[in-house]
Amino acid sequence: MNKTEKYAQAITTIKAVIDPSAGWVANLANCAAVLHETMGFFWTGWYMVKGDELLLGPFQGPLACVRIPFGKGVCGTAWSERRTIVVPDVEEFPGHIACSSLSRSEIVVPVYSASGEIAAVLDIDSRELANFDETDARYLEKIAELVKDLL
Figure 1: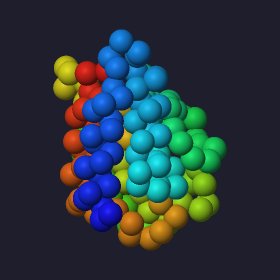
Figure 2: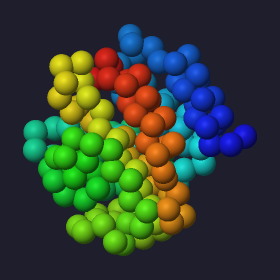
Figure 3: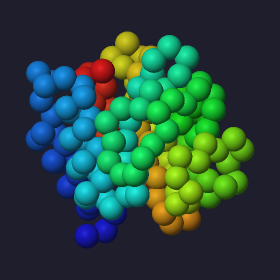
């Protein structure tokens, strides 16, 4: 399967497993698992907005940073700039927070709540340089839209 087909499969599965009565932790955990397994990412997870920082939420992959300040690193920057950020080489991103030295490229997608505030970010890392592009951004933004009512 190509990337587009994998994302289509992931979205179909995510739609099938979302259970609003189960709460956000269970749903975001399953979404991370579906994305991680379907796409083969190195690290797949969510950071939740708590005051002036992002706090680690459900994820798949190796050990992660627990707290990320507003405007810091790729996640904090995506939050502060209210936009998806694709980083082809994390070593070239000013202020990159290295939770793992094995991460080489990254994409971060803001997740807006129903009220329009950013409630979380979806953070995905790859061991490969330049692994993310506009296709990833488009589909991950669709997934962020699917979970917004859970937050």
